[in-house]
Amino acid sequence: MASSQLEPPVSYPPDAGLLATLKIRDEFLALLRANAPHLVEQAGGLLGALGGAETTSTTPTASPGGSPYLSTPTTLLAESCSPRGDSEVLSLAQRVAVLEQTRPNSPAARRPKRPTKHVDMEDGVEAPAKRPRVGMVTELNKLQRDDFDERVKTYLQSEVRKQMYALIGYEPGGVMASKDGPYLGHPGQYLVPNFPAGINDASNVCIQGRAAKMVLDQETAAEGAVPKEYRASWLYDSVLRELARLAWPNMRLIWTEQAKTAKDGGKSKMLKARTARRNERRKTRASQLRLAILPFCDEHILDYESVKVQLVHADWTGEEWSCDEDGTKNAAWRDRLYQTGKISLEDRDDPDIDVLEEKRPIWMDTKLWDWQKNLLAATTKKSHGKAKANSRGGLKERKRVDLGRVSHMMPLRAPYNFMLDREWKAKELPKYVDWNERPHYPSHVYPRVCDMIVTAPSSITPARQE
Image (cartoon, one colour):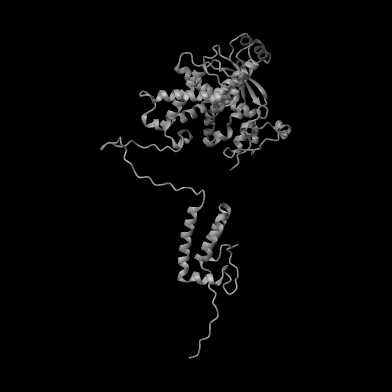
């Protein structure tokens, strides 16, 4: 019988499991080099069955006598393709587990705990509902707290604030004392905060801690206001101290405003209150204009919800000032109004005159300003007519004086181009680098309606289809 001729070696595609194992081996060795270099040699011996302890790449490259897709010797391929290859992979996993256990500074696994019976629970008594406590309750956002949690937080924070006020001797409207002044008339009777030093100063932390302890003692009593099922989450010294920290910035703000008032004679406080009143008047005027625009939208078949957003803004309604902003109605102010012909002689001599000065923005078209005033006047007249019908004397309308185009306050939201005064747009607008120019017409108002607002009736533009 003739001897059989040997067939040439056959190249097989790479084994997917082998390549994955080699990649895991390389990552494991890299981890050892970075964290436990003294174990690299030992691991190299254990992983030697998989082709040696060192490797540089798992990218398939040609090797002599084997497939061009393999990066390991043919002997390794023979071992991995045999039944012995599967056992080697299993052995590798076991050895890796051993090395992980011997690795220094490895995190200890949490030991499972056996369930224990609550000694206070009796048969037939239903266990109270558990309230999960993830960290401190004040660190949870509002979605993680229920409505009553918010009430408890508001109540406890108010109580902590009251206790801090009592500890430092402060009463609303009184003197907020500090280490560097001002001082109370009874030294040693109260704790003294140190506001310039910051919230973590020892004296400030002492006040917060004392107030938290007092509220804790108050609420842990049988008659405490916090329900029992919420005490486990809120009645902790750390929680109450955090509430005290949250209340501290407001106390420091009182001290800061108090110091400014003492330094400038109250001018900064007066200016802040004046600005707040003027801002509120602009917001009120804008709200009234949004209501007044409803009949206009019905008349011209416009979508009210869209138009009231595009045609009305608090920065587009001008300003309403009054001498009463400073708390006085002096004769010089009344005389200036009288010289402009805006008030009568009787009004000039009235020390209790109640007048608002209307100031049109310098950028606004005069016709747009008149259109707004006409809408507001019609709505006001209608409202006063109803009030007069339902009461004896009715409501007294506040006198207004239009001072003209004198408001230089620039709008935060740029108006549409059709609203701009033509002369101001040509000469002054190019000087404003931060002006975000908007389209000429709003998208939900017909161009013919916009032109009707800012032009004379004889020059109304014909309607255009959109």
